[in-house]
Length: 415
Image (cartoon, rainbow, N blue to C red; front, side):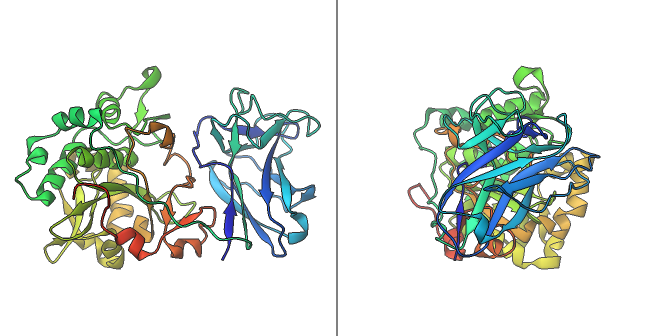
């Protein structure tokens, strides 16, 4: 097999990263075992729109082929093969820069909040390095998103789900905000979940990173308030997109004592056709049922709700299996949402690759939630993918779970 070596968790804030120039250079130090096989280097970076400036990369002083900029100025994963003779056992230095004199060439993604990172910045073309006062504003310390996969070692088993504490005081307050149909414990669970999906879909208008820059934290009540008011931190319009419908749904389900988890999808690792939804455990069917609280949609076949794997297996027929809830009309009235429905959802493009977020304790542990998921190419190391994804270019992630991992009933919760 192989193993990914990394020092961060992919918590990127898309508006606060590092800039590299001919003078300002970034360095990532990764401690690796010795290897006799080529390694694979991954880094998350974006070029300036319209720039023809290539990005330069060296490993332990050995320069690799330059990286040409793509037309879109977006953070995407770049993958490079590293010859074994460029790598060594112990500390390996990976330097990244470009030939622009000003900050007009390339940005490198960064995770903030590390006290003593093994990432460094130089302002004098590599003579002096520091791992404090980093980012383009020289304001914080963190780790650059630079990872290496080697043949030596094996990726760890995916983590068990972490659920919200049923006694968390904030769950009761959230429960009181929900519609009566969702709180009705005598009603079938599927009906309660459909009511919850409709309520969230009608609570605010989808606002993505193309229409705002302020990311809403994974806090259900804050999501509901910022989303409905369209005002958040510093008085700015907040991003409250598919991610936030899914997160709010998962938290609300747990407030009702129903196990639920976040489901993340993409058509490809650097594509812009991803989506974020949810799964909830429905006892009647003894399976995880797929819900899309953003579009207020479900996939149904022969009268029964589908799981994610069942929806993926539908292939080209997926569009005929969509069942819309009352909230769908309002969401589809938003032009960019209708475009998503027609060009992506009804064709099942986003369903090509699935993953799961293995934590649902967003209230108890907000410090473990990502600060910008969905604003860049997917980067969080907590995401659990299937083994198929590992073989199809998703090697920058460390967790891959087999079917029984995804299909197993929930443990440690009321079901």
